Amino acid sequence: MKNNMLSLVCGWLLIVGLSACDKNGKTETSTTAPSAATEAPAVNVPSFNADSAFQFVVKQVEFGPRVPNTQAHRAAGDYLIEKLKSYGGNVLVQSFKAKAYNGTMLNLRNIMGQFNPKASKRILLAAHWDTRHVADKDEQNPNQPIDGANDGASGVAVLLEIARQLQADPLQGDVGVDIMFFDGEDYGQPDSSEDPYQPDSWCLGSQYWGQNLMPQGYRANYGILLDMVGAKNSRFFREETSRMYARDVVDKVWRAANQLGYSDYFVPQNSPGITDDHTYVIQHTNIRMIDIIAHDPSSPDGYFGPYHHRHTDNIDIIDKNTLKAVGQTVLRVVYSEQ
Image (tube, rainbow, N blue to C red; front, side, top):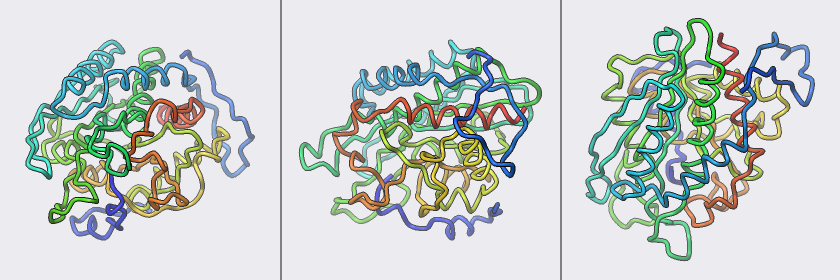
């Protein structure tokens, strides 16, 4: 994502005719008692292991920047495929080519792992696994790629840990989860580019998947996108596109976070709409999807934290507490669907 993508995309999405919609087997416990208004039946939810998730971030960063057309990118993709298979996922790989804003032809792969694939009620959990090819907001070495510990690796790490829990404590009944790793999300045109603005230069993987569904005819009851969900002191606001097209899902996630005592992370405030992978999922598939994405209104960028598209997006900013808050909340939402 980039700053000039903070436009209110909701009106544009309306044009396409979408409907707006205002490990262990442990039982999780809240750190604060929910009010009567938010009281919910007890559900057995696996305990999200933040240490495990953190190691998944470390592993991705160790590959180096996961920039398309590089060996690090190829190796990281192979690793993700094998990890999903090792956790019992039915793995589907969508290989394709896409032309970037600068004319580079990118070799990309969307990777999906399906859990309880025969279930009719499906929840799509997604993150992008590529990293930015330039540190275009950094004053030093702006043309060099970034580690992408938060912007890329954190969302993937949370979903890998969720996949591990889905194997250890399988979902019961007619509920299934599809974990999607989108490629080519962060190879968009820099704000500093002197070339004419090119629309839709970001989120190449979700654009392609939305128009070429894998598996064919895929449907989901709703989706949750994770983007930049691991930095210290992260705060997640209710993003506008998410509210407009999947308000009930936003409410469900923020209510779960409140019940778990994570309201300091999942702030009950609204933020502007942003173009991200969920935008194209909504546009092309009509799947109602929300975006859990860190928002820092005090940032000089106006939306993202000071590490965004800079070399400071490295392992030093990743916090296990943030990973835990996001991962446990998503696990609660998923297991409550049983």
